[in-house]
Amino acid sequence: MDLSGRLNARDYTIAHLLDEHTALTTPQLAAVLFGSPITCQHRLNSLRKLQFVDRFIRNQPTRPRPMCWVAGPLAARYVALSREENPPTPKAVQQRAERIMASPKLDHLLGVNGFFVALAAHARTHPAARLARWWSERSSSAAYGRRVRPDGHGVWTEGTASVGFFVEYDTGTEPIGRLLDKLPAYRQLRDDGGPDYPVLFVLHSPVREQHLHQRLSAGLGTTVTVATTSPQAGSDPAAAVWQVVGDGRRRRLADLPGSHGQTGPINPGPPTAVDDPLRLLQSL
Image (cartoon, rainbow, N blue to C red; front, side):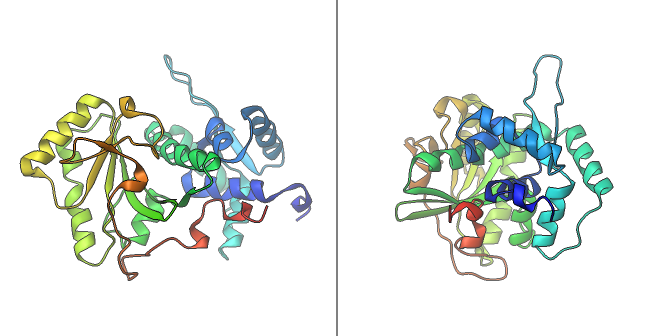
């Protein structure tokens, strides 16, 4: 409470983002919330001195990683109390940060977060566009009755279009068959009353993208809509980088087919104001 006068809506937004998405890099936070990386770095350093956030770098011999930020004791306490939950102890917050730093899935996590950050950054320069929902794997699975376990779920709005989607982020370490095995659960979710959202595969390479399309076109997929992209298609996920299986052209994210369906036990329905990841900034 003594520090409340030194914190603002953007700081509280950082707390919520780090709680939901585990870890974000300096460039990712800058792209979503700041005008420049330098301003972002200065503010994060100030918040670290207040024990609001914490940071780590896990360098690899051939590939340095940028600074990663996680919730500190005060950010974790604020988020828990805002949800009317018991706050974690400082020791628990520290242990969580250490598990994140040591996790073999850190690269995958940062890749998934980078996909959604790119959408949020696009929306900052396109007033008609908005990332209306951005849920982590944990929140997505819980919201859909643990029927599916996507790497993330979002709803993208652009003009009058509102497209929900599930993201499967591929690093090239799994065989194509493992990717195909994920699709029946999405079909079953839809058939049981869930939404009819496209499954987006963000693939490691164009060769892998081609192989996935070949397998799906051979009848090994399901009736859910599958759209794919790879680095050579472009770096802006809102742009025309998505190839729907069976369609040779690339489409914009807002042009992909899908339906929110009827709200129910395994379908949260269209996004609400509470779902907006930047809702605390809307009045600024």
